[in-house]
Length: 509
Image (cartoon, rainbow, N blue to C red; front, side):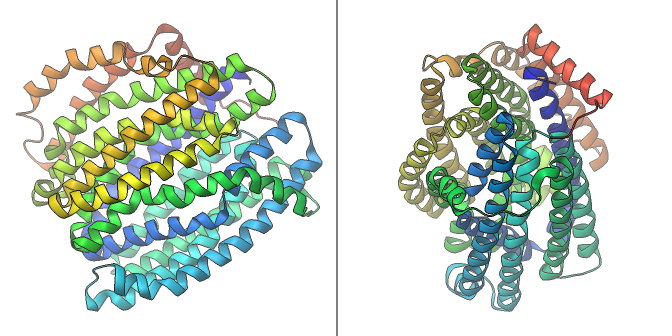
């Protein structure tokens, strides 16, 4: 399978897995939030944010490893492929241990001096950060193992494993909460699941690439990876601050108990990224391969179509969340929660659309080795975003955090789209034109339909309200997506679905 068919089929595998995990999270989130309590759930969110931030110690090796492995795989350079993999694995292990130790040392200070944690929760919060430190080592090793399947474009395997691990993680989390385990018990269960994922990814890496043996570490390979990864490291240091700093500011300048009113809408709106995540995760190695083959036209076409797919796929769901924010949160989390969080959900849904429409552009810049541009953009954005977030949160609370995030991602997307158009040799307005076409017209024409039905949406029992909201959503989103795409895109989607259902045989290597 080559060209557009390979990309679309891989995206279908990823989408199937992402939607499955999303459905599981939507069912599990109310049980976990109410089972743990607002403060414990807020701590769970903050531990995840902090652990992800300490992941910057990988120094950009993840992106660099996938890029270099994909290049060697395209050229059939098996020895070089093996050397890069083992060198990256050893570097990841050393760096993750450094990050874990730093997180263990910093945990008491973070809990006692940065976060507004109630005294009764302080010991459990510190232990939670220690568990997160162990999780950092496990997840970084899992990432380097998964880089093999990503570089090989074996997203059929990645999709199946993602769905399996997501199902297992959900069952473990909900089971531990229902059995009365505290936050640390739930986190230990999650750590065990991630350890299993690590083991499976290592088995898969050796299965799809038997020539990974014997172990071989070359410091010269590490220097090459770090040259590319240096700018990626800047983004990894700054990026989590841009994405998650408002959560920390809510916990610091307000209270941890208020954080769920932002975190839950954020997670719900972020769930819309299942489609763009599925797509951009497969186009990065594909763009590296196309550039290695000298196919400039293929690069432009891949970025153009990906940008269009992302925007059209998310436009309808975003409109649904904006119009029915109160009703959706009432059905999902309860009426009292919806009163506090519906404003955040509306703003964050728009912010997600503004953010993801530049994801294909971001992948192109990294595939082209221009991580320096994204790093510079992130530094500039940080200088603006941090004081804006503090000001808006202090004045408007969680609603101010949502506004600050929207402003930041709008600036980021504008910069990325312009830079990607230049790198691909397209007019600056070309990618933006891909997004504002028939899909917007259809969405606007069908908008009265949503307002007319708003009076009946969410009425009745919780199950009945959920069904009515789901039916309205499908009736609105389906025509926006289908009519917003052209005939050629329809054929590409149908081809991917048929290939997914047929489960074609894939060869090794």
